[in-house]
Every structure is written in C-alpha cells, then in structure tokens.
Figure 1 (spheres, rainbow, N blue to C red):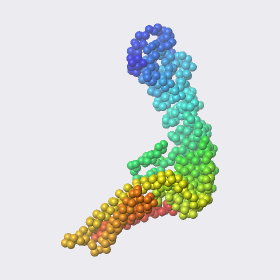
Figure 2 (cartoon, one colour; figure 1 turned 90 degrees about the horizontal axis):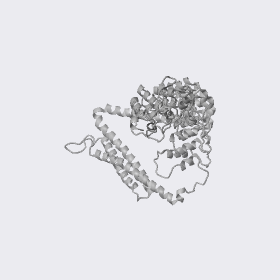
Figure 3 (cartoon, rainbow, N blue to C red; figure 1 turned 60 degrees about the vertical axis):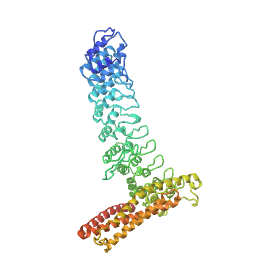
Figure 4 (cartoon, rainbow, N blue to C red; figure 1 turned 180 degrees about the vertical axis):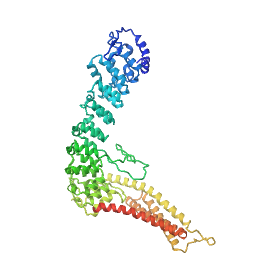
Length: 617
C-alpha cells in the first residue's frame, strides 16, 4: 500500500485522502444518497478501484480495512465514505485472514464505523447487507464474533439490529456467537444475544454446545442455559461427552498443609497445587444437570466411561456420593475395559474415594469385581504401588486376597513381579505391600516355585541389573557418609568440651564422680564408636571392586550403626543438658521434657487413631 495513503487512512485525514485520490484520472458521477441520508460520491466509471487503492498492507488489509480499524470519529467516517466512493467493492474485500472491513471495525469496537459500513451496504440492497454481515473469516467467524471477543456491547447492538438472525450463522466446525460469549465469561453478552434472538445457535467446536463451556465457567450461566434449552444436557461432543461429563471432570484439589511450598512439583499437562487453588468445585452444577436430565447419569462417552467413572478419575467424592445416593445403580456401571469406578479410583490413587467405598456396605458387591483383564481393585492397587489405597482394601474383610486375573496372577504375584531388581529402602511402598500380603498368607500363582527368574537365563540382563545396583549403592553411600561424618565430628568435639568444665588445679572433669556425667561419657563414646565403624563399613559398600552382595550387607550394617550412633548422640545431648541446667533450673528442664513428650504423644495418638479407624472400620 502507498505509504502516503496508509498514513492518511490511519490518521483519518479525509482531506488529504481526497486530494490523493482526486489526482487519479477518474470521472466522478453526481453524489448519491443512501437510505440513511449518507452522501457518498460514487465513481460509476470505474468498476475496479484506482491503482492506488489496489495496494494492501502485509497482512492483506485494504484502505477500507485500515480506516475501519483506525477510529470511530467523524474524520474516520468521512475517510471511509471517500474510499467507498472510489472503490465500493472493498466493502466485501478480505485480508489474508479472511476478514472484511466489518470484522476489523467490530474487533476495534468502532460501532459508528460499523453503522456506516452497514448503511453503505444497504444502499446496494437488503441482500447485500446480509451477505456482508454473514461473511465469515478464515476460521468461520462473522463480525459478531469479533465484537463479542472484544467485549464491545455497542458493536453487538449495531450488528444484531441490522441482522437479528446473525447469532445463528457460523461455520459448522467453529463456535457460535453464544458459545464464544460463554467461553469468554461474557455472561451479560450471552443474555443480550438470547434476548435479541431466542432461536440462536448454541453449538461449538468439536460437537460441543454452550452448556459444555458453561459447566467449566460459571454455575449461574448453567442455570440460564438449561432454562433456555433443556435439550442441551443430552447433546454429546465428538467424543461422546455430555455436559455432565465435563462438569465432573474438574479435578478436586485439597490443601497441601500449612507448610509453605518453596519447590513446586509440576506434572506436564496438570495444574500446580498451591494455597491459591484448593477450592472444591461447586456441587450445584452436578445437581442442576441431574435435575434437568436424570438419564445423563447413565450416558457413557465413546470410551464407555460413565459420569461416575469421570468423577472417580477427578477425585470428586462429593459428586460420587450424590450420584450413588440418587441412582444406586451407578455404582456397578462398567466402562469399556470392564472397570467400575472403584477400579478407576484405585488406578488414579484417589484415597478418599477408595476409603469411602471400603467403609460403605452398599459397595460390598463391587469390591472383588474383575475387569476385562481379570484384575480386581486389589490387583490394581498392588500394581500402582500406592500404600494408602492398598491398605484400605487390604484391611477390608470382604476383599479376596487370592483372586486370579486372566494371566493367572494373584495380587501377591503381581507385587512380586512389579518390583524390579535392585536395592530398596525397607519403607518402600511396594516392599511394605508385599510384606503385608505375605503376613496375611496370600497365595502366589499355581506353578512350580523353583523356576529360575528371567535374568538368570539372560547374562546381559543380569549384568545390567548388577551395574544398576552398583550405581545405586555408590550414590547412596555418598549422601549417607555426610551424615555419619557429622556425627563423628560432634561426638569427637563433645569429648573435649565436657559439661561442667574442668577443675582448675587438677585439670580433671569437675563432674567426673557423678553418675549422670558417666552416662554422658558412655553415650558419647558409643556414638563415636558406632559412627566410626559405620564409616568404615560404608567405605566397603561404596567400593566397586567388592562383590555386590557384600556391598549390600555392608551398606545395611552402616545404616544400623549410623542409627545407633545418632541415638547415642541424642542421649548424650540430653544428659549434658540435664547436668548443666538441673542445678539452677530443674523445674524448667522437667517442664520442657514433659511438654515435648506430651506433644509427641498427641501427635502419635492422632496417627494411631487414623490407622485404627482404617483397619477396624
């Protein structure tokens, strides 16, 4: 585009624009008046715009596009008239994105410019107005979409006044104006559209409708949409999801505790969990949708998942309670894989839901239900390795510990095969799960028990596992050695900084004859001895030339000695504190100890109470 022309239209300099365009060899006809009384000089001699108006910007905007987006004042309106008079066909011209000047004016919120362009089109007949207004850009949106996206209420009024049925028109695969308004939380705009045309389109991309968007945005909008059209609750998207599926898919978050988070764990594709987003999704949405369409509770998506499966996947316990209370039959519904909502909850590690199922008698019939692969909920709990969900199922008296799946594996066999070769902490969840099954005498597969494991038939696999185990031990010894060396340093330092000090004339400990002081020396000496032996043992464990099984043994021995050294050092500290404080503030010392024990006891009682309620309920 000519730079001089672009500057003129952007600034609304209609006088300079007239001079610029008047320099062309054009034969202008007398002024013609439109229906609204707008006078436009129309050049009938040229059906194609003059050469200067043929130019476009890099994104394909014509001069009329540019002036329509630049402003809404009188000088811009006059500039638009000048351009239209010279090249009327630019009113329907498209840029590289498929947008017309109406799209650009609506996006900028220039309502007066919109009115002018509509009146200019009306001069060519009513059909011309409808054609211009309903023209879709490259993504299937009209100028009304642009006005809604920009939240320009006055522009929406102008467009809907010119074409009351405009909210019905959009590309089939694109969002309707109402869907766009709801998805952008423009609720006032949505109501305005419905008031203008109660037969407007509700559809959105991917087979969705406005209710699909509303359940993820605002419950008040859900109530309005259901009131306008109750059939929206029955419509499915391209994947078979109803609005109820969407409403139940909102993940229920729980507070992480009172401690602040300095290192935030992030899983790609999932929201982070902080103090700012621990609100429970509103249950009113679930109630509203079920009241509007009770059958939606029994509508599966194309993968066979019912709403109760979606609720279990999203940890929506409160929604599950509503579903099974209103429709008890939902509890036994299975998806395409033959899984109940309990299977889904276990697979997703939803402890609250698993605990609720195990505590509620009405769910007894689904506790041992097997999916298409023969796996019960206990099989999946063992496979996922989550100790808490496993514990809920394990302590339930109705759970069968010896069910065989289609591979003829019992839960205990699954626990054996799910732990790779290596070195693990004794508090590892999978280790504890296997020990629990062994203690309950859960059975293994029905096969010979002397069969060799796979790696003994595969030297390469055996060598790879040994190399992996060696690396684990080497890495672990580095971190453990730091702690042990610290204990040695503290015990060594305490030997020469004795409580009570020394006798000035003899150079001996002042409290050498007291039993408390002797206890301090014994505890400190034991801490020093154990930590010294532990560091020696740890040196063997970290040496690659030592046989791997011997390294495992030395590593375990070093941990045992390190724990004893740490315990002895704590005892030595308490005795030293007692020796120094008791003579001057015995009551204070006793109060501190009692308070500490009382706090620890209360904390332990809460933990034990929680465990007791899970085990004996």
